[in-house]
Length: 99
Image 1 (tube, rainbow, N blue to C red):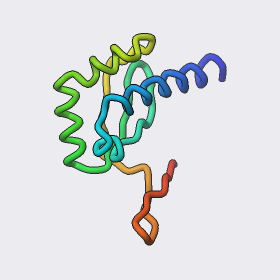
Image 2 (image 1 turned 90 degrees about the horizontal axis):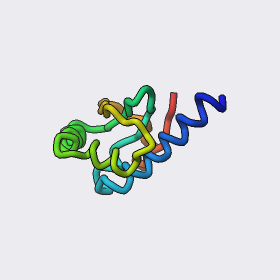
Image 3 (image 1 turned 180 degrees about the vertical axis):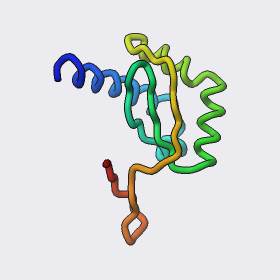
């Protein structure tokens, strides 16, 4: 656990901090950092328009800015995946659901 899980969790926490600082709130609300393995960051995006916007941001240098903010993390690739990590209750509020 000390050799695998804890370092991965620390790296994901650093990436999450950079992600929050670099993205506008409107897009941030529609994303969830899912995992980080072998230099690849997997991110869920809950809608097509936000996925397209993030793809554009990646082409404009978002990953390079994340690398600048997290030099100790070997980030080689960001995979955007269309999917949800929540369900909605009767009032329309999001409730996190992790499987």
